[in-house]
Amino acid sequence: MQRRFIAEDPSWSLALVAPLSDLCLTTLIKHFARKPIFKELTPTQKDYVLERLSTSLPLTLTAKLISDGTYWERCCRERWDLCDVSEYDNSWKRMYLERHMESMIEIYIPQVTDAKDVLDLVPLCKNYIKRLDISQLLTPIKEHHEEEEEEEEEEEDYRSVLEIDQEKPSMNHFNFNILLHKLTCLEELRLVYRIKECGMNFEWSMFEMVDKDSENLGKAIKSCKTLKVLQIHLSKVEDNKCRTLVRYLLDHPSLKVLDLSYNQIGDRGARALGKLLGSSKLETLTLYDNSIGDPGAKAISHALSKNPRLWSLNLALNRVQDDGGEALISGLMKNSLLLHLNLAANELTARTAVALHKVLLRNNSLKAINLSGNNLGVDGGRALEEAMCYNTSVTQLDVRLTGADEQSTSFILQALLANEGLDEQKNAEKCEMEGNIDKNIADLLENMTAQT
Image (cartoon, rainbow, N blue to C red):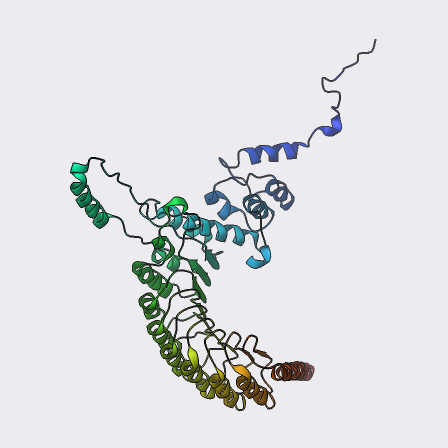
């Protein structure tokens, strides 16, 4: 007599039974938060675990235990829609830790959020954070006090409102002075003092750096010895705040790029920046869309003759005018390192173009000049045309919307193309020469080895 066993699940078969090792790993994954076993596993087992491990595990556990790879890629893709890992040196772990720190700072509410929440991340993240791009900084929460409706108490209400205004919390933002000196690998810091979604609680004070912020940030940057790039946009940085920042940036050991575009810096702030140029390692200074006039431009021009490192200066969309423009151009007579100069939309006329004509006859370092959006006119265009007959270094000269005639514009374009060809030829010759030098050194070493 034969017995037949019929499985309750018609689709069941022995082939569907998972190996015991997989069942063990599945159990390990299930209880990973309570008892993390990872280092003892083989590479194959680790891959199995990382592909299935929950991305909601606490960072205090995963940051120290799990290296870069599949797990961090899963964490990034589940949290953010756009994940370009090439911007993070192809490191998924760096992407996650940097963006997580950014989000913690962006949701930080002064006098409400515990700073410990941010500082506790430092030991886990500091070796991976090279850049922070902060797109908002929140202000303290204001308490709203209802006015009493009774007319007889109106005067008393007015007095109480005055007292509340005096006692209300300051609008200081996150204090970077408690954080930056702990991030020992930080190289780039980009900030915007604003709130993305303020709703019906809109106030202009939500969209500016206050005096205390500039003091705190200046101290923080001074303590961050590895910082190379500092960018502060759309934050109403005016002269006093700019001067405060500069005071702490003087003699910074590593800062190379300073971008204070879309602010309200005037001549006093520009004078401070001129002083900074004379005592720093800045290579790029960008002051696009500020309020710098000819006195500020003259101060920066004076600094150009003393700065041995600056190769890019952007003063587009300011109020430099011809006095400042001529001063800046004359400063290039003593500067042989500046490669890029942007003076677009600065109310310049043919006077500045004539001054530039004289410089281009002698200066062989400038590569790119932007004069677009100025009123150079026909005379200014012809002055630049004549200069380009002799200059062989400039490969970009933007004269759009300047009133230059078509003949001058066409000739300038042809001269730029010719200079670009010369530049490519020089680079090719330089590479060939370096290759020959390397070959000669290699032959010399080979001969010495053979003799030995």
